[in-house]
Length: 442
Image 1 (cartoon, rainbow, N blue to C red):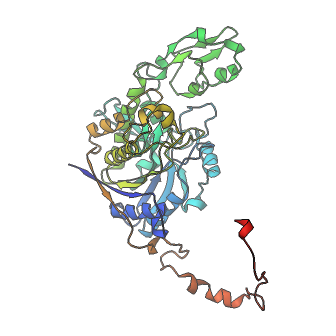
Image 2: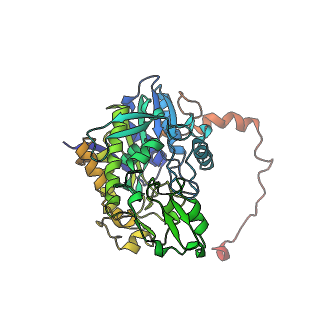
Image 3: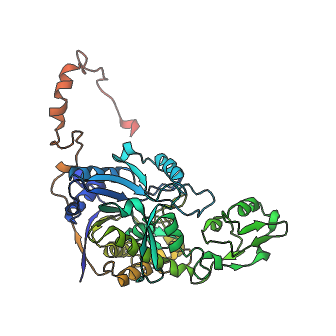
């Protein structure tokens, strides 16, 4: 049976066409408002961006959703989770680091209109264990407590590529984003020699040792002490390696090469973790909004953002995470690549070309693995009906209104008294030249 996905494109010619207005309109169209009862605590789960990343969703989106939740009687908070130490300078490993980065990226309680909470605590161990024998790769999940305890969760996802998941949308936001740090280690196979980077092939002769200009970074990058650089080369102790990814951005000489099937097992585990989060939160308590804009080839969890792969597409909303991600994948596939982007460099810039496999996956995995795995688990259906809404009926609910709970006030009524009090126009009018010739200025 097909799931319903609601969609509005990114074109705009008036107030009711803004992406914020469309997001709020689709929130209602998809029935997400119906999930929220008075006094429900509502988690708005999103990615607030890595340090120096610029493709993440702007704070206005969660702010508008928080205001919407409050208008329904709910109590919102914006949330994300700590990360594994997957990069040399990773800026979200602890809650303190995370909040410093979030504030730099514009996310504060003042900007989003509600508390900003790191859902898995200071170091990522504040979580709820979920037994999951039905998983395809994982038998358990670890879901961040603040998310598991929420009455309703709105998954606000930036749809883009992802180096490991291949796509980053609702499923990735649910599976990886709702997992605690402990849960992330679990879903990435960390500590398991079969499924993680600990089983990487080791070619010590490719390392130049301390003759390499970046040897000190390689020597200090592993928090578990699995990598050391000597005068003659690299020492790798696989028994100590937890597969945390941190070495990948600096060990670029080929001394450590990931196992062949590692790239395909991770999207499966992401789907498993999404199933675990869904199980913890509860059926019928999660709504999904995907914004397919600034569609970068890699995730918001890296410290830069490449040129978008395809033009902005628009906003999607659904109660089915599989269907909404499938709709986004189909839309990106159907779109032309942006000139000069990675799609052109990889030769997949034509409408109809599969783009994420070559442009996003660091191991060449398929963009469909995550979706097919989630469908097999029963999280949703890749068969969807796309309901395209061309225009919202009125801009009135979405215009500037500083007095919550009241009708918006037109500018004439709002400011006529002020213009009467303040003499804006000088006696005799403003001084201007009588005739200005713009012929030579064109």
